[in-house]
Image (tube, rainbow, N blue to C red; front, side, top):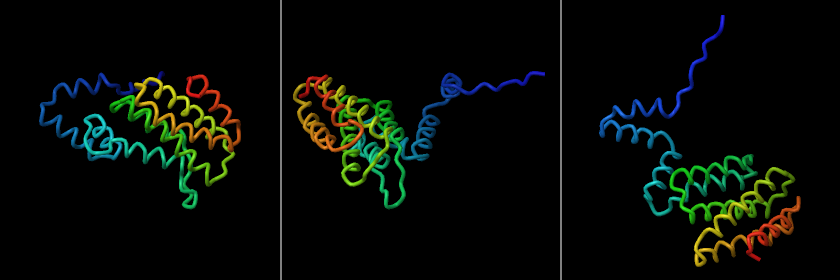
Length: 181
């Protein structure tokens, strides 16, 4: 006898239900989602550019996961920090915001590595990967917008000369590859 597998719900299944909702019901649903958690709030604030600092919640998440409070036994998660940037991309994905968040990620790592010794290859690999993502976003910006981001990344790169795993060298190679230095 074969076991029947239940089909996992997908967007098209939900879409059928949503199509039958009237405007007040849709607004109620969105209100419930908004109230459900801070990630939904951050998404909606970013999507509709509501508030003074739509990047704030994303930066807080990045900082929490790549620059943890080790005195309070917080752990590191580069994947959760990267997810914050991915969530922002889904919410609105403005190139300047992506550049800001990816540079901020690198700066937060630099802050952490400035006061805490880490011998964690995945952390350094994620940092170099994000450094490259930052460069990609920066070179896609208009020339006038690039300067401040480049200056910030150069500061990270200079600090990176003191870290292990060849991070400083990798960053320097990436800066040259993208025509920054």
